[in-house]
Length: 307
Image (cartoon, rainbow, N blue to C red; front, side):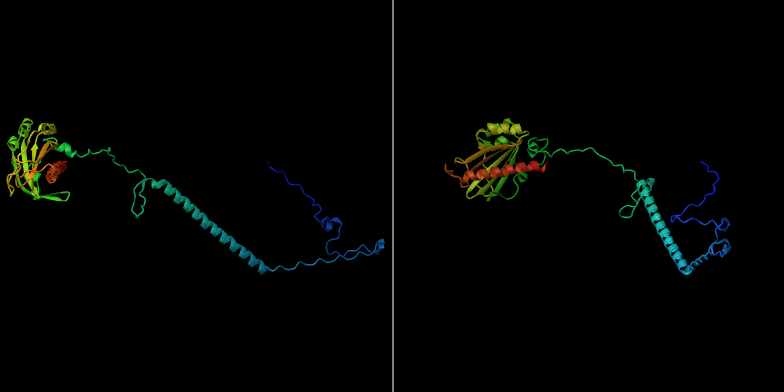
């Protein structure tokens, strides 16, 4: 809204209630006036008005120093405020740069090298593949198609000595034949031939006057070896040589039969001097069991080596 022309305002009473003087032209004597109405009018003479004191001259030098000091403070405040404002603006700009990631520009990494853009790095994923477990050693030695390592007296009866649970046996001699029935007696030869025996390997060990011959018959399958063990009647023929003479011939001896995988194995233990074992003899029984344990472990190790 547009204001109209201002009207003359008459001054009113101030806070002390004293009327303002309007000047000499309005019938009041001005300051310092010496006029008098005179006695002719029957009025007492008018007392002269007191002269107002002239105000004291200000200290212009002090005022100038105070003004200059105030100006300096204002300049410092303006400069400080400008520095803070510039720092705040720089912080805002830096925050904006970090937030935007330079829009694909490389950024320094922890070692000072560029880390590339903010785009995610593509990765190659592969399906989880669990390798099949290794073949069971029993599965290897149960099938001729898997059990392909050479079968010889040296591979089956290694070393010159055998130690089982602290008992050591010396190896006297070894032998191998493809005619399984010719190295067996008492009906064992028939069981070997009927179930397809491929080879019969033998070794003789001695310890403390006892001689033990072990024979290992080789078949194509586990079922054939098990059948030969179950049908076995008789014994494997003792193998002489290497300082060991004829034993278990028309003499009492200890015999055992067992099988594992495609192998059937048999032992015969007796006195190395050709004598007979007594019914309460434990040395012959222990010797036969030790050599049978040794052969069992060798056949299992054969399966482990081919896994």
